[in-house]
Length: 318
Image 1 (tube, one colour):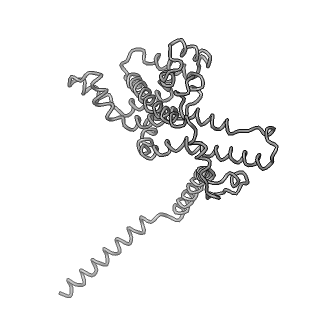
Image 2 (cartoon, helix red, strand yellow; image 1 turned 60 degrees about the horizontal axis):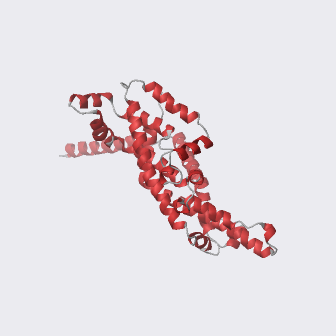
Image 3 (tube, one colour; image 1 turned 120 degrees about the horizontal axis):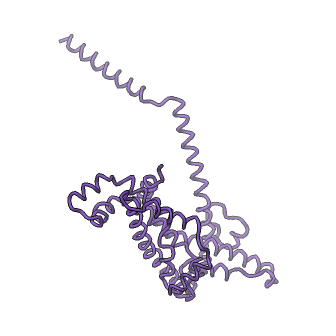
């Protein structure tokens, strides 16, 4: 009995020693720990560098105009005030501009996705005759364009001037996004899968809608985010193609608010009035930045995981 107990004790000791040895073997070396600490510190510093301007803009928009112009805002709001947002939201065209921007972002993105994904899938098929020529023609338009005036004349001649379609159709396909989409289909959907579907009697359209699209959620999320941000921030196209104020997107309205808030110094004789006017202009500027950026910042966390996967898989390879 004593022998059995001693053997059990030796076995337990050996087991503990083995576990201790494994832990010591798995423990990273001092150089690795120092490198990991350096990487964490570097990433923390980079995060602070990127995050501070955002915090500063939000804090400035929530401060008084005097605190903003005197430079007292550093991190937190000073003399909490909503005067900037009141000046922005009391504009009569703000809500119509907001809903127009939402309309252009949603439906414009749908048009972009439909055309970009369809073209990218077609260009990814190696059996397509003239695939290289078509890719070259698309790429050529990315490098060379007719210019602003021919584009304006084309839109006007097509009957799109002063219509909602003028904000969606002229830039229906982004060539860079098309190349990313084509590369994604080439690298993520094997040819054997298409051949197997063809043997089962699946047509090209059925393969695209039933097989390719369900497997393309990452790249669709990436393209949707890129296109939606582009539509949301677009204002120059609206300046060229839209004459009716009822069609103006949010960015045009915010631009006009900024222009209206600028008062020439020659028109003012009171120094204190000049200070208040300049402070209010800066306050409105910060409030406009928050109002125009908040919707896209709110959407991004929901597509972040797809964004990272899609941009890595859809990157150019070879």
